[in-house]
Length: 221
Ligand code: SF4
Image 1 (cartoon, protein in one colour):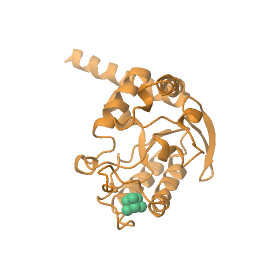
Image 2 (cartoon, rainbow, N blue to C red; image 1 turned 180 degrees about the vertical axis):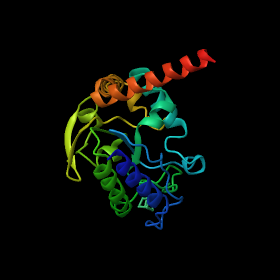
Image 3 (tube, helix red, strand yellow; image 1 turned 45 degrees about the horizontal axis):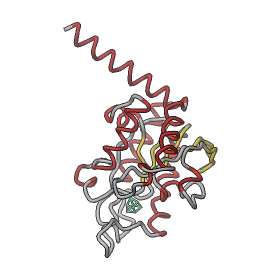
């Protein structure tokens, strides 16, 4: 069963990487790979560096995101990347707008890329989805203000599957929301909710077991 699911996911990611549906995108798709997981992280869209580095959250926002996971859930970047499936609202870099910041994907591009995410939810049937940033949160629930949704757990249905949703703010340096009140306390509360979620607790225990195993084999040499 798991083998069949892994094959489906591997094929899905291979097809996703070949996708060229949106002509205004400025890169080819970025994927975190076919990671079988009960947990999905949904980012917004890659920046200019991720397509070159060939992984999501590869630059400054990623540093903050992985620090959050290490601090609250005890999982370092390697553990997070190898145990959580990374999706995004759009998988390609949208390019810059006239002010020099990253262009927000257009509704047609979001619709195109949502088909990939729907398939991922159908294949993985995750227990927990963590949307990161307002654009990602909006794909699941209303988000007029981050204050209304950060620090809460929602039950959401999408693609015929019901799961928990714990939104996080975007960790990019461009927005100070998560560093100042009330965002700072709400973000910490949301990260504690993520850490205490049974799906994350299972991943975190598995990551600790594999670190202990690796250390024991090193000592045995
Ligand atoms: S943004 Fe998504 S749908 Fe559009 S080309 Fe990239 S992968 Fe395909």
